[in-house]
Amino acid sequence: MASDKAGRESDVVHCRNVRQSGLRITEPAEVDKEYMASVFANCTQTWLESIKYHLGYQLDFNFDYAALNTLQPFPLNNFGDPFTKSNYGVNSKQFEVGVLDWFAHLWEIENDEYWGYVTSGGTEANLQGILMGFAQLHYQVNIGTTFKGAIDDLDLVIQTLAECGFSRNQFYIHCDGALFGIMLPFVEQAPQITFKKPIDSASVSGHKLLGCPMPCGVLITRIEHVNALSKDIEYIASRDVTITCSRSGHAPILLWYILSKKGRIGLQKDIQKCLQNAKYLRDRLRNAGVSVMLNELSNIVVFERPPDEEFIKRWQLSCQGNIGHIVVMVNVSKQKLDAFLDELTEKLSTWSKEGAHRCVAFDIGYENCVCLLHSPRRGYCFCFFYRISFDNNNRGRDNGDNRGHVLYNNWRGWLWSRGGSYSNNNASTESQPSNRSVPA
Ligand SMILES: *Cc1c(COP(=O)(O)O)cnc(C)c1O
Image (cartoon, rainbow, N blue to C red; front, side, top):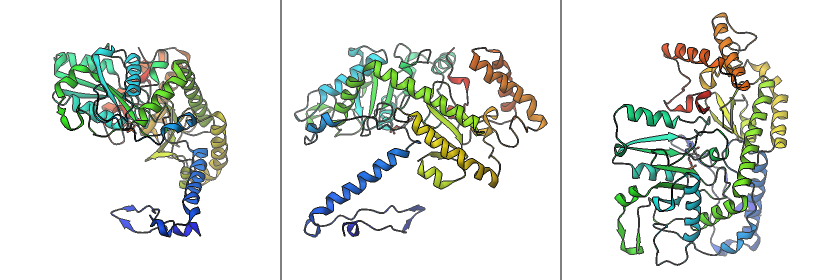
C-alpha cells in the first residue's frame, strides 16, 4: 500500500525535541505510479482540514491564484539588487520594483529616495534593516507585536532620542511592521509608518495580512543607507547588498498580483472586517466569562489559555505560558469564530469544574482578568479600589471619554512602583496592555 512507503512515526528524541516523522525518499524504481499522487492527495486533505480550524497564526488563505499557474515552470530568480540589471534574464524585477514603489508610496517616501527589495519574510527584512543601520545607534520600533499586537510609540522614541542629544545622523530607526505595516495605513486615526518622520527603514511580511501563499516580506530604506553599504559582485553583474544571494522571483509576482487585484479599497475592506470580527470575538469571550484583551487597532485577541491541549491543537491556537491568542485574519469569518466559540462555551463548564480561571492579570492586565482574585464579583478588598479605576478606564475608552485615563495612569504608577509589570519575560512593549496604541 502506498502509505507504507511514507515514513513512520518516530520516537527518537534529539536534545529535547521530539523528531517529526519524515516522508522517506524512495528510488524511482521502487515507486509505483500512484504513490506520488496518493502522497500529495493525503497532504492536500490534511492541509484543507487544517485550514478549516486554523485560528492562531498570522497567515491568510483567502485567495485564488489559478491565474498564475502559467508561471510555475519558470525558475524565476531575482538575485541581487532589484534596481540593477542582471545577466540572468529569467527574473521578475519589473514586478518587484512595482511592489516596492507601491509600499514607498504607502509609507510616504519618493521613488528616487528609497531602496528596498522583496525578502524571504519579515525577519529577513528586519535583519536587513539592522544591517543598514549597523554604524549608528539602532532602534527597532514594533509596529504591532506578534503576540499581543501592541504598538510602540514612535513619536516618543524620536522625542527621547532628541532629548538625549542625538543628532539625526547618529541614530537609525527601523519600523518592524510585519503584520500592521500594511494594516494601519488603512485605519483612520491610527499611528502611521511614514518616512516624513525621521525613520530609516520599514518592513512588512507578505504572507500575513496580504495573504501571499509563500513566505515573503518587503524592506524599504532610505537610499543613502544602501549607497554606504553597496559593493559590486562581478559574478552576477549586479550591485548586491541583499543578505541572501538568490531570491524568489515568484514572490514579487504574487505580491504584485494581490495588490493589483485587491487594490486599496479592497484592502481597506478586508482590514475593517478583521478589526470588526476581532471586537466581536473579544465581546463574546468576555460575555462567556473568559479573561480577554484586545489592543486598540489590533486584530489579535489575547485570552487565557484553555486548559485542554487537544482543544488548543485542534484550533491551532498559538499559546505562550498562561495565554493564547487568535489572530483574526481575513479568512477568519464570523461563522468560523462562532464554531470556535460554540465549542469553547460548551467546554467551559467542564473546564471550570476542574479548577478556577488561571490568573492572567500580569499577562493582559488586571482589568481583563476574571480569576478568583480579580473577578469583578469576587475580588479581594485590596483590589477593589483599583478595579473601579479600570472600569472607569474601560468605559471611558469605549465612550470616547477620557476620565478614566488619569486613574489608569495612577494605577500604572502604583504597580510599577512596586516592581510589578505586565511583562512576563522581556522588556518590550509586547507587555503594554491597553491604551498605548491610541493615537493622541
Ligand atoms: C511575524 C512577525 C515577524 C516575523 O515575520 P516573518 O515574516 O514570519 O519572518 C517579525 N515581527 C513581528 C512583529 C511579527 O509579527
